[in-house]
Length: 484
Image (cartoon, rainbow, N blue to C red):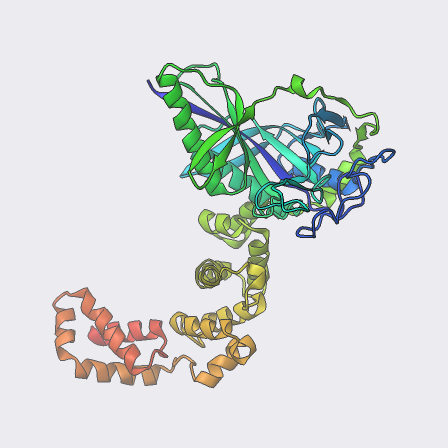
């Protein structure tokens, strides 16, 4: 039997506010346990939540970016369940009426463009953290510790429709979503710190069947690699169970990266089990059209808009435009570089950023914000190629010196100090060409016999004589002229 995998993702993006969603406690990562939890986070009697306006504005930003409807009135509810790191024994979330409704994410899988619709995106608070491993109590006994620093951290839970049909599609969707929330500045996207994590709902069904199979939810996948491997394993597991005549139990599962497998965590709850009801301590959230317009006015240009503009105005290829808009910081670096070059030279800037500069960043695992060559310096280097001061080959040597900080990264100073100026004097190059032709009659005869590789060999000999400084175009032109 042929099987079809059905995948939907629930993604938790930690919002980039400085304080929590219902309290004034800091959201800073890495503080000592329980140093960032106040009376609201600890649910002490008499404490009341107050909604963080910044969290709402970030949710509105996301909704506008994905073409969703922003609800003019949404409700906060209590999601009731008991867990040691949930002090109130309920989580404040949104259920029936979320602030963001609908929308879609467009992404590319291989060479295919795909669109996945979003069901909703709603605001909620995070729980604390239970510390099980290597934790001992005051008398050395094996214990579980509770850290409430994360309790109340603002989250935007983004729920997709179950429209993905492979682990590769799910990863492409998640990467695109991750890039978008980081681009907007509403989430730092740090997966190691738990700022962006996915729950994958996976089911299988016979190919051609309309009805969904029983789904299992894999919780808290905090890397794209784990997301892909967990889905692949879970799909295989479910198919094996069904082909052996068994039934899939709806449950929540965890992914064990060491064993590369999912394992049962608990029976999957339905919404009825959480006994949702409107939170009596929080009034409905009202988002006016004026507020939406204010947020819209502060929105950055979106990746798709930049891609279109880079192609239409700067003449970039679709590939270059796509690569340069994967990160907002990279797009800004490119625009700053291109703005300092003559009109029509943006393609050359793109080549350098996607080539030499990206290679350098990857080698040293640096973000573009840490790049030792700033846009103005790169533009100055490219300008020396354009005006013929240096060749593209020599420019790579100059760039390497700039990267190491030679002469404070000033390309003109490096060119001058190393004597790298390109020879463009026609008379000087002509003399070198004559010497090479006289010294290599056998290669000349090979060329005249129709061997094109011989021409490249002659070019190499001239460049060698010029110590790499001769203008390559002039060398080619003079060689062809003298060879007839």
